[in-house]
Image 1 (spheres, rainbow, N blue to C red):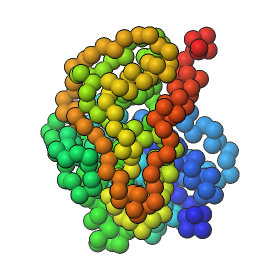
Image 2: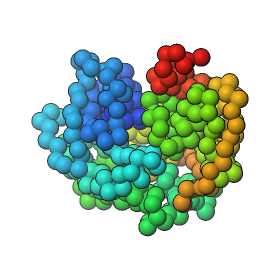
Image 3: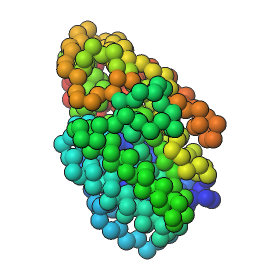
Length: 321
């Protein structure tokens, strides 16, 4: 792999997904330039890379021009608020990074003649009328709803990628990422697993929206990173779903986390957010066929790893059990 890509730029590299991609690339012998403005990224996520001879950090807002003198073999564009709590707090910045940020980074990839991997999302399918979701499905998105700032930013980014691919020959790769979890998630980012884990570790009730019968499909971060890099190195422009097809209800994931943490607390039900998807499950037949990829980490194993990391990093020493 290192013969194909010697130096990669990762935008949003101090975020949850981005920081793990930095790790995986470095382990493959790739030099990494990590770019982040810390709007939602966390310096702690890349602190362990300080001093690494093949790692360089640049604090920068990717909606502004970025000038680099060295050759770049791959641009991995992962800069964006990704959790509902973050993109609802920063709606305009979310739209700008999806539009202007993608435009700037595609321009850089064009100049450097590098591969370009876009972190798109299963949210482009909206509240889907097709289940499971396959890449040929165009989606059911409310463009003027509160979640539209994230959904439409990613849909526009996909269209922009394909325009650069068709007009300028940029070697784009579009990954539609489904729910991913693991160490380094923000403890209060509003997504199910970190919210449930933090509540359970603190002995509190777990907040479930609606009846909890809406489904999600959770992919452990190591599996996700492997799938993303296989797509980057492939000849497939995509879009390609990268996610775990094992579907589970939100209520069942809450019960599993209660069991794994030993919390005897109860589940409390809260009103459903606007436009909250009722189902979410990737059809990954294309990823299996083209990339030879399928997730391997069982949900319970991934949750145990995540809970252990949250306990170590987010709980006061005296509160750890």
